[in-house]
Amino acid sequence: MSQALARLPGLGPRSARRAVLYLMKKRENALRPLLSALQTVAEKLSTCSICGNVDTSDPCSICTDPRRDEKSLCVVEEVSDLWALDRSRLFPGRYHVLGGRLSALDGVRPEDLTIDQLVRRVSAGGIDEVVLAMNATLEGQTTAHYVAERLEGFPIRLSQLAHGLPVGGELDYLDEGTLAQALRARRPIA
Image (tube, rainbow, N blue to C red; front, side, top):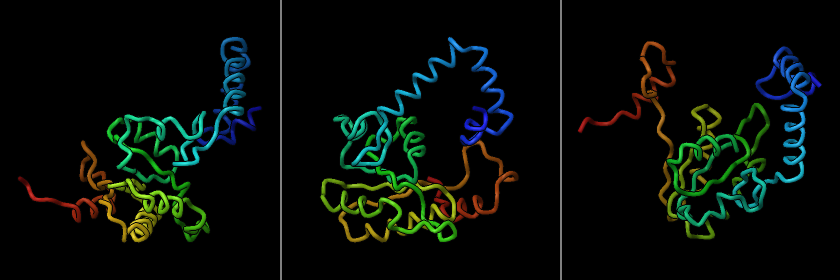
């Protein structure tokens, strides 16, 4: 069992062994509820056919929420990015999960992602703004640039998340890429 747990992201062999020992000691209070929850996930979890989110229903709860602004769309690389943004409750619109990012080294091409589905969603109309929320990596920015090119001809407002200095960040501890982006994105003081 510890070998299976060790394959999960963030768990190495030692952490997996500790988890197994804990679950064995707390069989009734921890192991059985965990097994039940995993069984439920295996039976009910599905991928949303509209946005690519993972939920217990298709379409997902975000796509069917009438309080969401259906004219705003936030494009993310992975479901974990969607969950992180949605947890903040700062974006009132809907999402589109690409399922990864372009990477020549890893052999990930545009047709491996849901970029065509995104273009179809935008071309169907009703979307005024698309926010590109890719990670601040070379692959993430390459993906954002490619998606921006594909959406260029549509009558939408296209924006990208800001990059640069984090709140509370000290210049001495920042890498050159973050500093360079912060300098490029500088703005006048009001």
